[in-house]
Length: 134
Image 1 (spheres, one colour):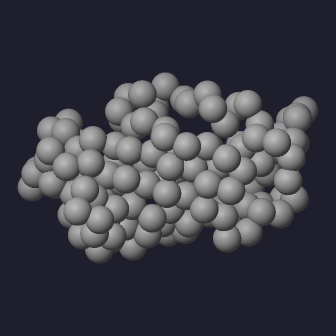
Image 2: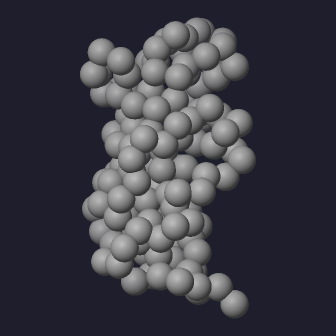
């Protein structure tokens, strides 16, 4: 794989809206943190499943972008989430995204999301399609 594509370091406005902080970007791994605050509450004082999925989706796109060649872009074509434990208000979601497959036309990423005590909260497997820009 080539050196990390600089576009991987630029996050979309949605990442800022969520409040996520990218802590590491390489072609092999992307990590991030998302503090659980009231705005991400699902009405039971735990992080909304959609916020967890959005965190993982952003990391999968970032990880794929880190592996793209000039003139390529990416889009998510499939995502599967298993939820295991809640992330309460005041805690932080920690995410680590690693490759399962990095091909020419698709890349498959697995994102493990844990909370402050290290407990596994969610496991997301996501497929990204590699697009040639026109």
